[in-house]
Length: 422
Image (cartoon, rainbow, N blue to C red; front, side, top):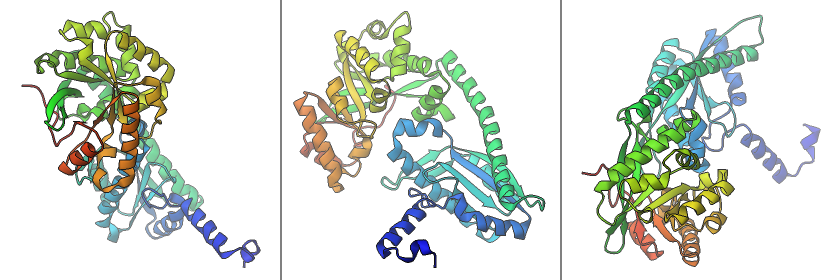
């Protein structure tokens, strides 16, 4: 027996075992990491002589977690892991395994014995994968990038290094393909800017109990049928490419131009990041001039700012918000409750509106902890004379619970899907 554990208390020993296991298995996906399966890979290599390795990562991983928050990103990783596991079930007879490179990481490794199966799986993954959300049952399309490598037995090399060399080859292929894809998408962004090919959808915000429409949120989309159609891809990629300001300006102009068809008196909710605000104000015509050019008053506009934007540039954003307020614009904190910051954001900015993130609203009737959190936010809002808007409302039960919590402004599929104005 190892003398280091001979006199160890059983509870302490179990705790150490659990800690050791936690360092080897990802707590989100429950998948093993590479060190756990290295012996199995070695045995596969002994049997086959050559193995195929696929390195898989979510397409816009460099921005997605920062955009949606780590809780939602973890949920995406969990669904991707489940999907990959399902794909490999059909290849079990030919020998395959799935693992993650590191605990808490977002890189998946697939080791396969069959070269043709590896090629088929690669082609399937680059087309994108469809995962089902555990809570809503809705299918989401997730784009992934894939790199390919080969692990080949070489008697002169240590087996472990042979395995890692094959993974390194897959990583290099991953980056090479990614650079070419990024260049193609950069060209697409330039075309979007040149042809002004973004379109605006409007989603109603209603006042209960009579469900009268208070206003509309303007939501921008890229060209239909392209990777950049979704807002997450459009803004995530352009932020990484250093072109977010130009794209947000285009989206703002399109939203304002389309807003002339809104019902008289309807409030227009506009999404802008700190980058977008700074870029727009650096132009010859700033936000105020652009709003007035389409015949709208600043008092009819609410600027939605995410918690993330505040957390990344708090002091500068507060200065900009104060300047805009002097012109009559109103301010909303968007995605409240996604975990980027705390209630001190509300105290600093004193927003006119607080928009609850849909993750807080989802399953609200069944989750008392969420109700307590929403109740705390609404209590703060009352004290600071802010108005709470619940986003992502999809069921009658959610409508009623939110009403019971004093939230009379609601937005979501239950009241209307985002769509162009007729």
